[in-house]
Image: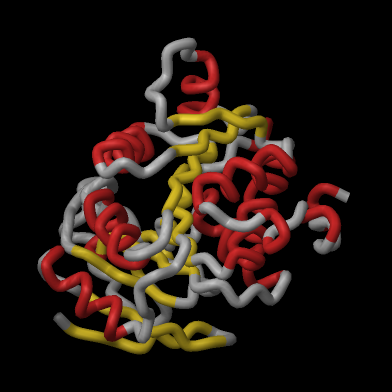
Length: 252
């Protein structure tokens, strides 16, 4: 397993490259992260412009909860969709919660990073890493979705002695795989409806898995309550985002 410091224009971020999932505990130690965090696994994909305002509002809510709960957030780490938005919100509001990007080394790049596209099935470009994440774990694999077991295992390791929850915003087939793995590991899933695609599909299902709960993406207080319950966070430690956070320019 190798390590590398990635230099973005305004900051440096430490990155680890484990070869096997058995190396994850060591990788987390290399990132100087300890276990016993509340953990939020944030999953989803591109933001549909028709649901963009409500989706960004939901991501703000998730970020504020993570900050107040001293939680780790695990997300995809690329500069697209909800993965980009959570990094930008963390930077904009100067939040300090650890934000770990877990994605596939072969499919991404960064400043002065790899440029070859020979191994990419679409063959045109690599996805950029989002520059405001605090840590990256870049893992083996050739197709998005290969990182899903790594995300689940990382959440399990980091939340040792604590609780974890998966939050779905929009999402497609990769998110479906993420949810299946979360449920197999007994991790509750909160799907935020009105963000499109898989989240709205789950909202329409009358007989969902007992560990899946649906909440409207603009229902801040309901989201807070559900995450508090999943993480067993005391009500006094996490409050409604709207009472402490200035509005995002996109929703003013």
